[in-house]
Image (tube, rainbow, N blue to C red; front, side, top):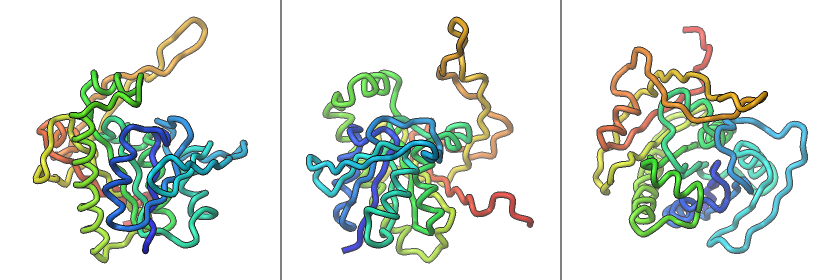
Length: 256
């Protein structure tokens, strides 16, 4: 039975991980390799100057490993040491909160993990679930406080994602350097909610750092947009639809 590698950047105890595991078990043997702690905003960084350790977790409904490194570390280490052969695909997520717009995409550990898989020539997917601010803050403060409504939405998002991955895997398109990015809106979704091919919004952020005494601390700020090419992923999410962006990193810097 083919293996499916699942990773995230919210940590192995993320409240959205189990829904993903459950949905993908019909497609193959799921193996989780996830960071021990939250690793948001780390993009595709690798642990160059520290050792990375692996602890097998027996409390998840599949083969699972808690790893002390970054999301990209988890994928690289799993491919090189934990899996006997390349998996059918790499699925990263479901991220707590959306990853829409270039400022988020290029900083996202969720996307960074999928990119590591794509650079090994493996079909790779990154999924994020938009949340309203109250749900987002609640889950960050207490990851176990998913609740029935949000839990049901996560299960439905995971089911939609598994169907999307299955259809994509049936195609013959190249996989090297390609990350398939799915964003689910904060609005309610249904099985037939439209998936819209969307351009990553050209977002602009001001400083993400606020001065605190003699130091500066990371703080979230709203993003603006510069000359958007519609439809953008942000527009699609605002309309209550599911955003899909095909991110082809193999084309960066290519001479046309």
